[in-house]
Image (cartoon, rainbow, N blue to C red; front, side, top):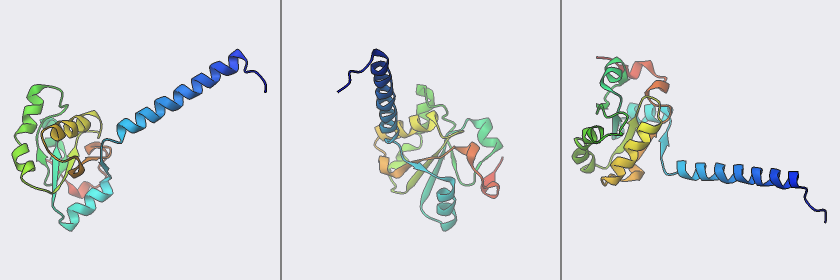
Length: 147
């Protein structure tokens, strides 16, 4: 069997590191549930029990939000004050069993922090979904309203 050259060994370690890092990132992201705009639209139109929990800031929510969504103004869900805004909704969310769709500006960090915070407060993770691409990626203008 041929011995590996130093360059080949370095390359092998680099590739292995990339594979391990990629696997690690994928596993971490698997802790969140996502839902497509298409599936969300179908649930809205079918009248399925659903809570649309919008965390956009007030200006963004006023400009555009999905009809029937609850305005929390909690984005980016980093401070105690922002988490306290979510606390106002926890009793109602806890008393029901419907699906919760978390809507943030782009479906990223704010939505993940909301998901984690609500889960830490006893809301079942299996009930919560993050809207893919958030409000910014919502492709159904007839289901949008502005104040």
